[in-house]
Length: 418
Image 1: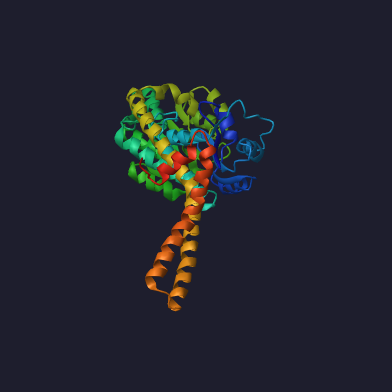
Image 2: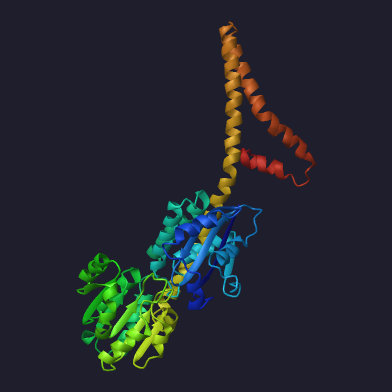
C-alpha cells in the first residue's frame, strides 16, 4: 500500500486555476465516490478550500501514483488545461508530513491560521460519511488533528490575530480613517465571514449588514455583532449603503455584477466602495474592479498585508516543524506495526490450532485411563516441539547466511541473551 497526495494551492496556481478545479459541497460526495471507484484506490479524501484543492489516496502498490491527478483533470474536464505546471504531488512519508503541515497551518497563505483545521475535519467527515476512508487514511487524518492541537498548545503559532479576514479588515482600516462612520455589507455566513464580522465589530465599524441564502444563519451571526440580516436576494438593494463589502459564498457563479455596482455608485454619488472577494470561485465579477471609485481585492491581493505581523508565527513555525518531524516518525512506526498484525494473527491461529488438537488428544488419553502425569508431560513436550519445529529448521538453514540476519532477528524477537 502507498500514500499519494496531489493538489494545487495559492503558491502554485492563480485564483483562476484554483476555482476551475474547486469542489463545492453539492458535488463533493459524488466526486469522492468517483475517485474511490478508480482501480487501485483503496481510500480517498478531498480537501477543497479557497486556497487549495488536494486529493489524498491510499493506493495498491502496483497502481501508478498519477491516478489522482489524472482523475482530477478528467472529473473537472480540464484536459485542455494541463495542471502539471500548477500542481504538486507527494508520495509515502512525504504525504504524512505534508498533511500535518497543512493541518497546523504551516502551508497556509496566513501562517498558522486555524480555519484550515476545521476545513480538514469537514473533508474527513465527508469522506467518512461516503465510506471512502478506512483504517490507514482515517488514522492519518486523526493523527493530523492530534498534532495540530499539540502545535497550538505548545507553540505561539496562533497567538497573533492574523487571517484572511483580519487582513481584509486591516486594509479597510487603512482606507477608512474612521470605521465608526462606515457600513459593512458581508455576503455569506461561513467561517471567514464570521471572522470578518467579529474583526469589524471589534474595530468599531458603524453598521454591519449580513446577506445570506439562509436568512436564519445570517440572523444568528448578525445578533452576535449587533448587525442585521437580509436574504441574499435583497443584497443588490443594499450595495449603495455599503462602504465595505466582503464576500465569501460557495456560489459557482458571480453573485455581484458590474451593472449592479454601477447603479450603486450613482446612488452613492461616486463615494468609493472597498470590496474584498474571498470566495473561490469568485463572487464578484472581475470587471467590477475596472470601475472608478471601486477598490476590489481578491484573496491573492491580500498577500502583502498578511506578511505583516507574522514574525512571531515564523518563530513558532520552527518549533512546530520539530514537533511534526517527531510525529511523522510516530505515524510511520504505527504503519510498520500494521505490517506485523497479519503475521501475529497467523502465529496465534497456528498456535491455538496446535494446542486445541493436542488438548483433545490428551483428553481422550485420560478417558482411556492413561496416567495423568504421563499425559501432561506428553502434551507439554509435543506442543513445545510443534511450536519450535519450523523456527528451529529455519534457523539451522540460516547458517548459510553470512550476515546472520535471521539469527540476530531471532535473538531480538525472543529476547535471547548471550
